[in-house]
Length: 236
Image (cartoon, rainbow, N blue to C red):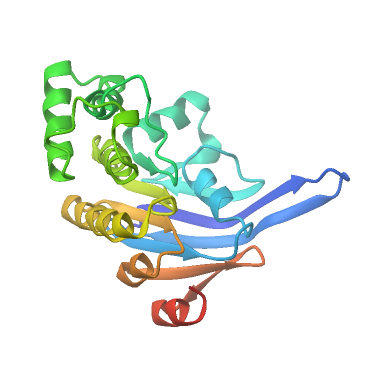
């Protein structure tokens, strides 16, 4: 089966304040299959977020290729990348980034409207997903009226509402208290499995690591596949 996501020879360098080049990612190679959940672990500052931003067409690699559903990022203009982000990729971040002036329902409806879905259909789909994540009675509330866990559940619904082929999640439970970490983590995985959405997940949460299909550690700019049990026992 052709991989959904293919990454080969990926490099990312930044120029530091002293003018010297700092290589954050060095010859990254990875493939992700449809419906597969891949966890990435590593020390803070190791380049995990930089990798996700490149996979999500939010940043450009210094070298190498990223191919999603047969489309090579390096051959796309900004409009083409925006099209991929809108239709094929969902994003979940540590901080939910909900639009504070809009209700939960409006936040989840809006990505569909951007993709040309009519308002009635978009609202119905948003209501369905918000009910699935346990927010049936909170749809008209704005983010400031929701708890941290509720805001992140809304963010998960927003990421999945357009049925993306892949979701990129950067510490999705990292800003939650203990009670919400397990609840949001389980809900996120269960929904991804149900919708057969591939996930690339950066996390320090051992339970999320253990539920992934494959686990990689980002060390010295390189991805190394590791055993989830070893990671949770030794590093978390």
